[in-house]
Amino acid sequence: MVNKNALRAGAIAAGTTLMLLMSSPAFALIHDDGEDPGPGLSIGQTLGLYVGIPVLLFLVIAGLVTASDKSRKKAKG
Image (spheres, rainbow, N blue to C red):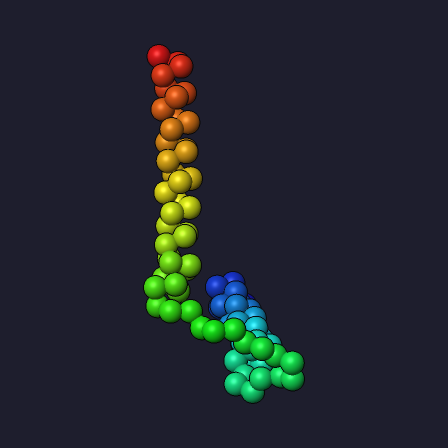
């Protein structure tokens, strides 16, 4: 009898390998005809885009949830 965890791990490993093989052309260094890549992002722009904006959105959503929770407690009490 095959262990369910071993079967699940094998399926995940096979799926991950398949996804990596399918995405390998995305890592190609040769540009296609007609491709016009724009200028790269600076370190500050990259951190702002991928760290700053998600943190800011998290704080806004957490603040809205907290504010709505406090208004419910005041209404009940």
